[in-house]
Length: 81
Image (cartoon, rainbow, N blue to C red; front, side, top):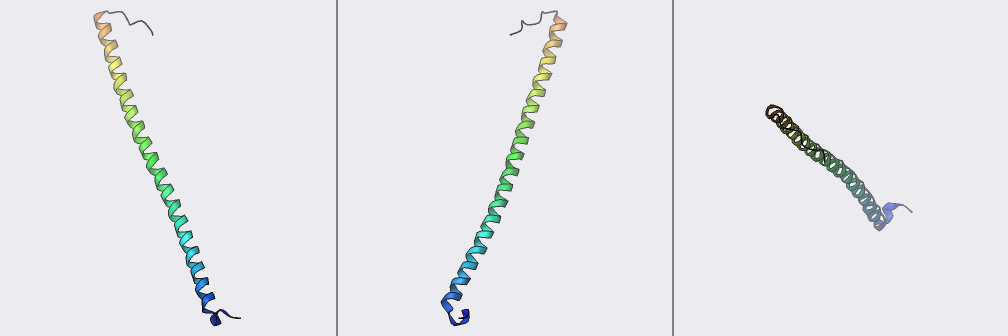
């Protein structure tokens, strides 16, 4: 019983193979999409970290300017919270 004698079996075999190839391609595409999403998330977190660091730097400079002004005026330091 060869496949050539049964065209329906050949068609079924081809459909199974195409289905398997499509599923494999879909899994690879899904894997690539997950990697791309992770990379986007990492870049977004890095950008947020840079914004936070810039805000901290600005606040530190402002704090230094306030302390310098207080020293020049001779004003007492604020009470700790």
